[in-house]
Image (cartoon, rainbow, N blue to C red):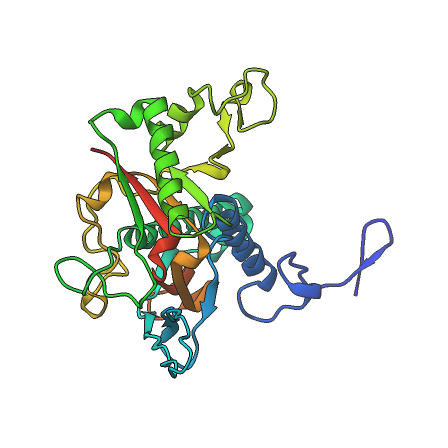
Length: 340
């Protein structure tokens, strides 16, 4: 104990660090600083990700695969007096998704003080990790949503997919001519045609979202059928420059619909036949209508953030990582509008 210059006492040899929980030095990276960094990552993903709250992510532990069983419909029959009714035959199938890749965002910091003392550095790293992971997650979900929408029922050959009896594929609408995606009336008509096609398959548009590129979003803003002339909250508000719904489906603008062919996607591999790659034809999508039932998704490692020191590297690592997978489940719950 030492005496201060005003007669007060203070304790020597003890440093109180705001990053130590309850002032206790654990000898490791300050836990409160790690928690703050991880919180920045999570909050940024919640803020920037469109699909995070939309998709039902199943936990995959003890295996690398989650499977969803699919059962076809049973046909009806009329009963004839004196004739024994034959039992109906239901077709069985399943769809599965495998998680086999860890997606990592990493930064290196050579001096711990750079990470501890400059709070803006930690916050910016967290925000950056959150943004790139959120974008990657959304793009993977949307790619598989496009795959679901492009499912064509058939016998499993020549680009078709064999489905249980009573199941149908996705819905596709192709615009008539180049530039129609920038014509507000023609784009709105295509949305109406898409919704009609889905509902014709006896599918309610429950929980659906319509994802469009910014160019198509602002094309819809110029459609007076969607925008209230009185600047009131109807389908949209021109004064606010926003469209809320089209055909009763919420409209969300995004830059994350693939606009060019995607090859060597981080989640694509030989085991899943490059399932996350996108062809040039698939990349012509200008709008994607998606419902949660369209996809099957699972994760083995939820979003995790860590800060640790490596004696071998003689530096600190700031990591954010996760492991997830997604695949089409029911194509009839998805639809696309393609450019001509």
